[in-house]
Length: 125
Image 1 (cartoon, rainbow, N blue to C red):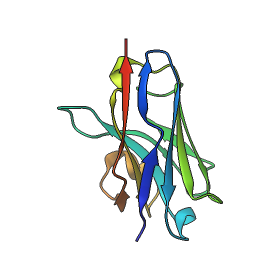
Image 2: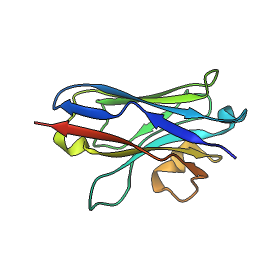
Image 3: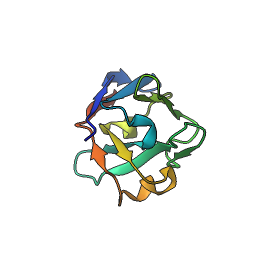
């Protein structure tokens, strides 16, 4: 069992930056590909970014490419999402997820093993 706890959300103005963190319990963090997803009110949950077990490879949704950066620290059992140049459309509940499979398939959300509870990000004008 892996428990994921997100933090770092908040209310910011457009153009600002935020860094989300996701702390994982257990000793098997490095066995999981990790990802970030988001869900805006009235919309389906969508893929944001994923990172391989070692942290050497990443994948991003087109909407965040060049603005967001996913990273991980396996020694700290933590995955991060650095969000720069935030836009109004980035407002959503952001979820952390863990997958025993490859990071490349996380974007289709068919094999996610664990989800966090989410942290709210609100971008104002």
